[in-house]
Structures are given as C-alpha cells and as structure tokens.
Image (cartoon, rainbow, N blue to C red; front, side, top):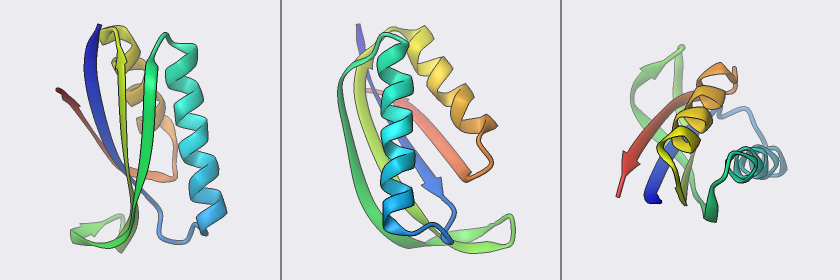
Length: 93
C-alpha cells in the first residue's frame, strides 16, 4: 500500500462545523474504499493565490492516508464531483 496526501479547498462560506463534517465525509469515503491510517488536518481559512469561481479565499484541509491507487482515484473522483470543493490535489508520498 502506498501513502497519499490530498490537499483540498472548501468554499469560504462554510462554517467550522460544516467543514469538519465535510472532512469526516471524505475520511469515510477513504475508509470504505480500503484506505487506512487516515489523518485529516485543517489548515484554516486562507487567501487563494488567484480567484477560483470568483472566490478569493477558502478552507484548506490536508488528508493523509495509506491505500491502493484505486482508493486514491476514487477519493479524488468524489471530491471533483462535490460542488463545495474548489480544488483538490493528490500527491503520492
């Protein structure tokens, strides 16, 4: 199993409990697709380097996990389908 890190940006209009709920949702998606050792770390609300969908800031979350390549692909696919995720970046560690 490989180790992965996904950093994603959530809409700035979300409150802290909503961001935590969304992070828990993607941790569950990872777990149901065979991932383990899941660690989700909120990095806070930060200004974006450039506008994304006419927004200038967002909540950054970094999630690290171990899993198969199919697990990582499915999690990224789910994030890209979710309207409240502005961007997601997958890196194999």
